[in-house]
Length: 458
Image 1: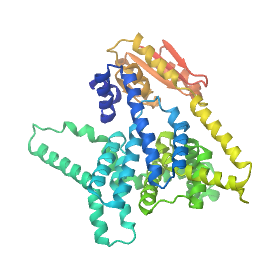
Image 2: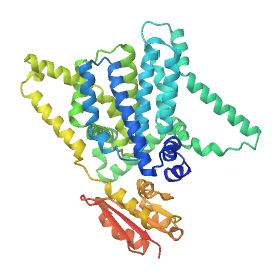
Image 3: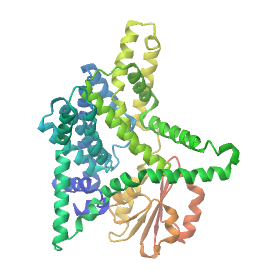
Image 4: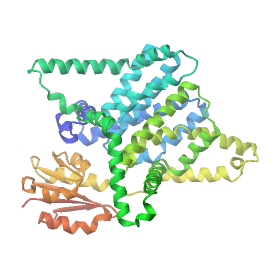
């Protein structure tokens, strides 16, 4: 367990502990224990996906189609071997949504507690779960046919686990303040949660500052009279296009089209509780990722993955409707005799790409880590711009993606340096080598041209 914590970092407490326990029980290496945990979490997620689809009103045929879609989804298959917290995060968020839907229908204590426990576990995987834990039960305020006082009672009931944990933390803090022997050693464990609190208070001002900074840059490039009044609209349109592009890249154009077709045509027959919780989760995830994009002007597939998985739940409803229209030869676009065969071909292309992975391979990072594990000193100090490399190598070290920090670091204290060079950054490769004043002892790369260089202090 201590080895997993050391390699992963102590902000990943739960994931690291699970890997450590798997190592202790099975005797596997850290890498194989991680893959074993991933298999369990991914299997649970697929089951949770199908169960949530059923809660939304999906028939047996839709559940089968949903199982096929999620099993061959490129994102799931491309990241199944990666040691990332998303495997557990997706599972427990979906479980939390399932239990919250059931709670909204019946108001049973069992469902309220299960919702609270699962969403708290999800937060231990990724801090974004705290947003769902804090705001998703508020959807009950909009439930029709109930008095406001009843809604408030039901909401507090849904927050029972969160309130209990918050009170326990406050009590511990008070005890730690009065009894110095308890100390505040657990503070670093809450460091990720502090990001949520900081974003809650400072998120919007941060967005405004970033917009102003980017607007200033634009006015310095283009004529003032052209962009003075349209800078906000220009930046907003650019960010919106970027955001939609990330969703389409992660989800796939085919499934993105299915989602909008199902929503516009209102094919999802679920009751108010299911649709309200589902839409609430989607809106909160859109808010989280949109704020992040506006603050940092970039996203990755992993940041929008949960949102895309929630959108994917609409796909089976669209597929079944298209099939029924095609079979009945209805005089509409979805009844065209060519549309369903084209969709089947596109799905086969997606499925083949999911299994074969048409994208760039990351196996060079795994091979580099395995080589470093066998050919470098166990107690050596590392600096790496690639976090997974340190994990595969089972080495401790400083991980920082920003190579621009290299001139400001005291590299003399590191025995080894590992730099991940993108195919777009080959021009900077020579500069990095010049800064280090040494040649790499080993170079690993994929067919696209991405490299990982390993240096050893002479």
